[in-house]
Image 1 (tube, one colour):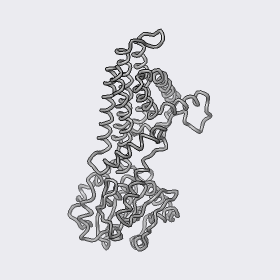
Image 2: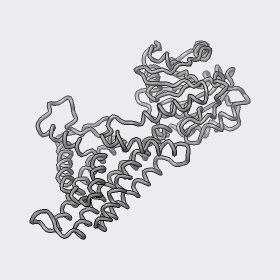
Image 3: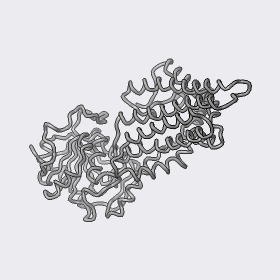
Image 4: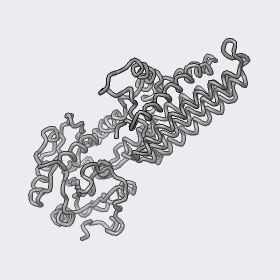
Length: 443
């Protein structure tokens, strides 16, 4: 039955097929519904209020759909339904079904969809995605007992509710909306009372882009710069994949400059390499804030990073061989070529191993790969401890920053003295890890 009050929603035949990639986890065979009552929005806000590049309703719908919800329903007045419909972007609709209906038609929608699990979300909150993911676990788990840490967020998770019970549950949070922000073990949410609260919500969203894996340079320099760029770009048409293309272009430019050699060539290479490292954070930040996750995006980011590194090592070797009159000690300038090839060869060998691992698991994010020396469940041998120290010391943000400093003082090629043996050792450890048995990693 047609439940939308607007002529805009696609007909049933055009709803996204089951082949649309969505994270389903253990509830892959369930129909999961998310309901938000827009009639409870404060007067100062509207369904189209922009929040970090997405309208309020588009943010709610996309967050739910990327988390595993099948259908999002917005309860709204007939006069507002076309506005809600227009505010839902094609990118969001590609991930699942979105309906804007009148509150009185909700029982018919429930009867039509037969959901096994339902989330009831307030319209006046911006959530950390972990809250919705936690609510989904509750909804698809055995029973339907409420979770105390979800209550401050005004979120209800219901398992196979009867229509009457669902209407009663929906009425309770909307009748008493909370004006307080919430922070629980499940995550945070920001209550929106006026437009001034939107800035606080955006600040929390961008702050979540900081990673515990960030190295010292990323934490204190790169992330500040990349977040400033992301805040400027989040409301534009620029997406994560565009940023990956830019970083790859910077990597190529840095390698070419290094290949020319000389102080100027190495200086340009060092600055471009650092700029590449800073901008490299922007694609992930835009993806997290706008929920634009995709395996293609993961691969573009990973391949862009790796090719930028590999090509720079080759460029440094060629540039130093062409323009430096001496090598290392008694060795001639040819040693720079060998060091560049060793650094690039070690990098390439590692890439082949962990790319095979990622492809086998349908992933593209290198952070999913778990290095054997990080396994806390096994005793740490001296070799594993040494590899762990080496991996920490060779974090890309630190290497790139050191490269820029070396470029300013005219000694950038000497970076290869550390990178060549370091990359070879890491490559050998990855290859041996795979030869010993099935690869480890976070699935």
